[in-house]
Length: 284
Ligand code: PAF
Image 1 (cartoon, rainbow, N blue to C red):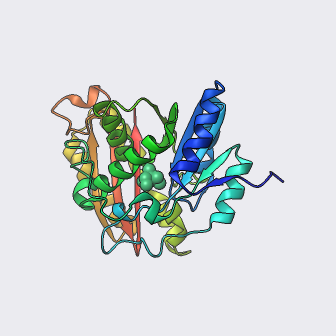
Image 2: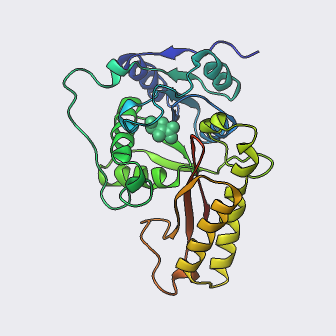
């Protein structure tokens, strides 16, 4: 049994602890989360622990990144379970602020990242990346870590965060952690908890179709033909609808031009299965 994890609920308490660590020469790693933790998050905590002397994780279900018809109210919340898992993975401090602490009355500043946040989930979830960019900017300013770790499963989010950190000169190293997967390759996600027993095997087809799409792109097959093929495969497998399957340049998320399949590629997908929306990506 690990000792109970200390919890900071205010920005002042978080800063006091991180400041004390840094002034004694310790390097601080940070893993922002929305809770409902699974092995994917814990692998990010361990990665932060390998790159820093102390690890802070935040659990904050950020209202500004959910659309009006999305699952903000239903999003699973269990702080006791999350804290125990974090302690077991080597985390030293949990930052668990209230909505009021993060967004005091009159809060009126939003961070928007043009370009990289516009396609894909930017189209499918209007306002989502402005909510993510705003809360991540705040969290990085509040914690002031040396290094922060985000999962590659949310690949577009990771690129949005890399861009805002560069553009706003936030002094932190951003590290992407590899996607943790179930035995059939399904990317671990807190939202997998919504899948029914019948839907679960269908969900496992998403990564299979993406890796086949990547293999065929690497063989030089036409980008839009492969994207169309992948959408058809997902619908035939039992997905209710497909928001997108697209091959893009990893850094900018720009569309691939003709012949670009010789360079770095990321294939990204979002598809719906009943009430669950799944995302995944693969590439260089
Ligand atoms: O990936 C997530 O869990 C969230 O989008 C993040 C980065 C914690 C911001 O709320």
